[in-house]
Amino acid sequence: MTTNLTQRRRRPQHEYEIREVFLPRATTRTQARVLLADHAEYGAWELTRVRRYPDGSRRAWLRRPIIRAVLTVDFDEIYDA
Image (cartoon, rainbow, N blue to C red; front, side, top):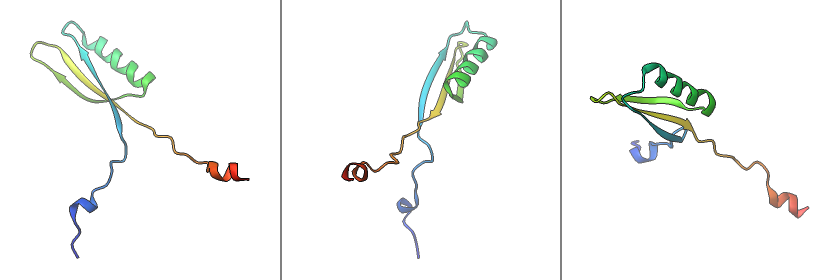
């Protein structure tokens, strides 16, 4: 019994919101660390990737999960009563 690959693929566990942060060349490592730590602590962002360019600038990608609200009350049941 073989299974089609498209049938076996599942939806990812989490969907993420992505934020891209550009850090200019003049930004020190300490300043970059503080900035990214603030994003993580107060905005619930996590660092996904950092890329450093030849000119000394950096680009960081941050992500955080999108939390979807799930309806737990059946309004038809409430209003029919």
